[in-house]
Image (tube, rainbow, N blue to C red; front, side, top):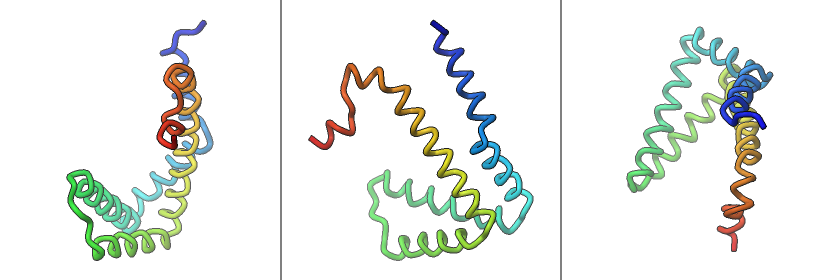
Length: 120
C-alpha cells in the first residue's frame, strides 16, 4: 500500500493541474491586474470577514449590515471577472468537499456520519 503522504501529495498535484484550479488561478491573476475589480473584491471580502468575525464573537449583525453585504454582493456579481471567479471558487469548493467526504469515509465506518447523527 502507498504511503498516505505520497498519495496526499499526488492528490495535491492533481488538484493543482485540474481545470477547475487552473481556471480559478487564471481568473485570480486577471482580477489582480484589474485595479477596479481587485478593489471591489477586496472590499467585499473584507466586509465578509468583518461580519464573520462579529458573528463568531457573539455580536448581533444589524439589518443595515445585512443589507450592505447584500448590496456589495450584488455589485461584485455584476462585474464579469469577479462573477466568473466566484463561480470557479464554488466549483473548486465542491470538488474539495467531495474529496474530503471520500477521504473521511474510513472514519465514518468507525464513528458514523456526523451529518446523520445531527439529524437523529
